[in-house]
Structure formats: structure tokens, C-alpha cells
Amino acid sequence: MKTLITGANKGIGFALAQTLGRRGYDILLGARSETRGQAAVEKLQAEGINAQFVKVDLNDLAQLSSLAQLRDIDLLINNAGIAGNIKSDAGDFDMEKSPFAYTTADLQETMNTNFLGTHAVISQLLPHSLTENAVIVNITVPVSQEYWAPLAYVTSKAAQNAMMFAFGHQFSKEKSAKQIFGVMPGAVATDLNGAKVGDNPVIKSPEETAELISHFIFDNKNHNAEIINFDGTIYKSYEPGLRSKIIKDVAKNGLKRKLGRK
Ligand SMILES: NC(=O)c1ccc[n+]([C@@H]2O[C@H](COP(=O)([O-])OP(=O)(O)OC[C@H]3O[C@@H](n4cnc5c(N)ncnc54)[C@H](OP(=O)(O)O)[C@@H]3O)[C@@H](O)[C@H]2O)c1
Image 1: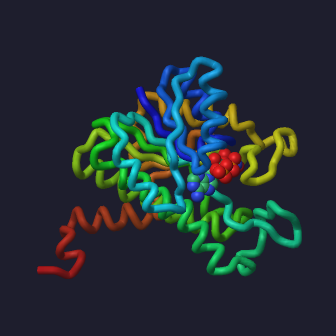
Image 2: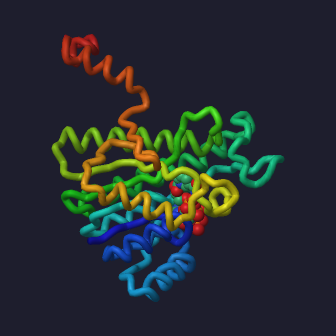
Image 3: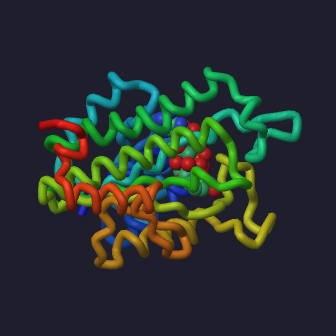
């Protein structure tokens, strides 16, 4: 079995590479820096894991086109991401920074990395690089909590989540055996948020987080088009009420009539 993990030189991505490598996966360790990527590969190889560096720079669409040459990937983990200028007068990692304090350029950079970069990775790999029943996992966050408003981060992840739902529904329509789903691991101590294990009881280590994410990958359930929270709660839509109303209307009247077509 073979997995490509983006942003795997450190944090949750590296812990996932270790966990999956220990389960016998061949690891394609995606990183934007060859130096940091190779250093991580060497750590995995030192414990007997079959690992190799693959350059993945989410801000370089031309570079990402080279991913289309990869073959036989059973598991793609879209992990690479940024928090999107969460610096404020309150500190370098201000997840409560006012949404009004973000510039359009902040949103553009974060959207480019977390959403468009991730879209490019998936779309380069979909035609020929993934196995028939490959699983694609996006590492994501809640995007609509009152206490949680880092604007660039949550809008980019909301777009990524919307893409996940759209791709998952298309897999279902095409009766594809592939799956795509999101996992929200909760707060994890990494360079992304500057948090440390022990700062707060809810903060997990990257290693615990990798075990948790693996649990959902290997639980023998089909999670296509789902977002799974760390406590196991499953979200199938952002607008569950709307979804069921539309489905009832379409079932009764047909999609064409609903859209006003003859
Ligand atoms: N930490 C949390 O509490 C938490 C919670 C929920 C979800 N997540 C998600 O988990 C994922 C991993 O984050 P983390 O917490 O492990 O953070 P991290 O330690 O900062 O790791 C982020 C990884 O993404 C890479 N990356 C950043 N920009 C990139 C780009 N343009 N192209 C390619 N790679 C890029 C980084 O590479 P460099 O080393 O080169 O910068 C690094 O390998 C992210 O998608 C994040 O949103 C994190």
C-alpha cells in the first residue's frame, strides 16, 4: 500500500507518515522544501520505513503538475496548510484576531495554499495516479463556530470542505469505489498555532492525532463525502435542513421542474 501525505516534513503530517509507515505503507513524503523533506525521510528510514521525498509546493501550480506522473497511490492525505496571518497585537498566534483585521491579500494567500493548492493536488492525481478504491483524506477544521474566527483560515478550509463534498457526491454518482472525506482533529500542538501539549487539556500531540486520524481511515466504514470530528460526530452537509427540503422537493417534482426548465 502506498500513501502520499502533503506537508509531511513536520507536525501532523510527519506523525501520520510515521504511523502509516509503521503499518507497512510505503510513504511518499510530500514537502515543499527538499532539505526539510529529505531530513524527515531519513528519520523514517532510520526506523525501517520505506519513504521517499516528493516535492509538493501548494503555491506552485506548475510544479504540482509533475504529481500526475505518480502511480498506484492508495491513500492521499491533504495535510499541508497554513493558518493565514493570525498575527495581531495580541501575539503571533491569535486565533481570535478580529475578522475585520484581515486584508484581502491575507485571504488570497491562504486560499491559494489551502484551497487552490489542494485542488491542484487532487486534480493532478485523479486521472491516473490513484488506485481504483483510493481514499483521499483532508485534514480540516470547523468553519462556523462563534469562538473560532480566524477569517483567512476558516474561509479557505470552508472552500476545501465544499470541494470535498462536491467530489464525494460525484464519486457516488459515478459509482466510483474511491472515497474522499475530511477529518477535524481538534487542537493539536504544532508550529501552526504555537501551542504546546499541556497548555490546555484539549490540546493533543501530533502522534495522538495521527492515531486518531488513522482510526477513521481503517475503521472499515465508507466515509465518502463526510467530515468527521475528533469525537466521532459525522457531518454530511453544511445545510442539513436545506438539503433534506430540496431532496424532498426534487423527489416530488423532479429536478428540471424545480429549476424552472421544461
Ligand atoms: N494544529 C492544529 O490544531 C490543527 C487542527 C486542525 C487541522 N489542522 C490542519 O492540519 C494540517 C497540518 O497542520 P499542522 O498543525 O501539522 O501544522 P504545521 O506543523 O505548521 O505543518 C504544516 C505543514 O504544511 C506545509 N506547508 C505549508 N505551506 C505549504 C505550501 N505552500 N506547500 C506545501 N506545503 C506547505 C508545511 O511545510 P513547511 O515546513 O515548509 O512550512 C508543513 O509541512 C493543516 O492543514 C492544518 O490546517 C491543524
